[in-house]
Length: 491
Image 1 (cartoon, rainbow, N blue to C red):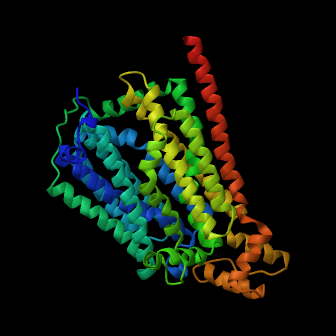
Image 2 (spheres, rainbow, N blue to C red):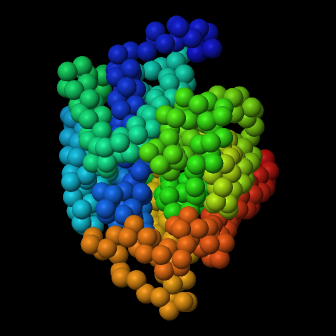
Image 3 (cartoon, rainbow, N blue to C red):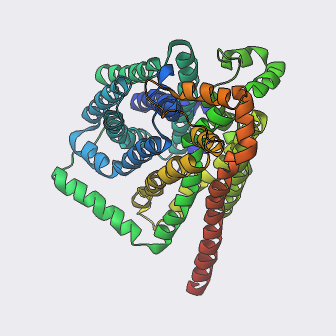
């Protein structure tokens, strides 16, 4: 039987059907909208209200981002079953309507409960979309082109994940925060046009059982897979990896905004590639935090194929441990210093670790799956991601507010000098507080930031983040030792 190694590059591209390309394009725009918003969401939720942001606390930010995203990653167990029952086209239309409404009104509401509710609507739409897009690609490929097809599909994910935040940063810098939500809404409306006018339902066997029976069967399948302790323990251990991974997107943008001056990185980058550096620059002559964090997606687009070739023959468990260790070094460096050049270097190192470990995680699940149950086991892939998102609130919210929040640290210093300032409200904004605090301390705001950094060491949060990564590696070492010993005893 032929496989995809017998086909040339052009022949492989021509082998894909129209539904495949439509699904890939829709994935690009859906990820453009999601990452375009998510990359700046932490900043939007906590930045000063006089800039058009919401001024929420870090705990409130952590609750909104963590709880809703955890729900998003759990829902495909149900939404996938619903899509199989009602059809892919109707499912996509419902998904895009939910996403468009959610994205638009997230930019219109300002209260905690309303923002939480609208983001939950976005999560429902995204959860409806996720399993359908993958199913379309699966049904539109065969044994000769499926591996290459999913590679193309993953490339679309990263293209959308890179350009979404890139445009968000430029648009919000030029026109304010609301344009980011309009951009996400427009990207989804493009998908709605595609699915209504161009998408036809691929060959799909109708599901004869009721919707309730379909959902019940989905839960039974997940439970069957989790009854394999080898899989369950692996998933529990990998919660640690995703918990560490999340801090790049949940915590680092806010950390950069509060503590890191990105002008030095711009100045160095300008000497190498002036036009690109000028494009990335904001009105203040620095580079927005979301632009810095978005370099992770850029590095993946550039280096993923190279890293994949290097680790091609590595054992999955070894690649996972190596990748997680590299990621620990990267994430620790990103938080350890307030020098933006080292922050970018840390993100590069983290991306290498991510490229080494993440693909091998799904590869390992496939390898330990009993024959004929591969899809069943792969369905558990998102469970540790959901659990990690749920737990992320305690790091990006509670821990950050207690140890690294700039406002809290400045208040601590003011209290030690018997100086008090009003609580932050819509009338007395975060920017007003920074200005008054610097005046009371007889410093410029930049001097105040440097002083607080040196006195209170807010970057020490990296100890917790790196510690979680190290515990994950220890768990994998123990896991690998136990599994290897068990396999030898069976032999």
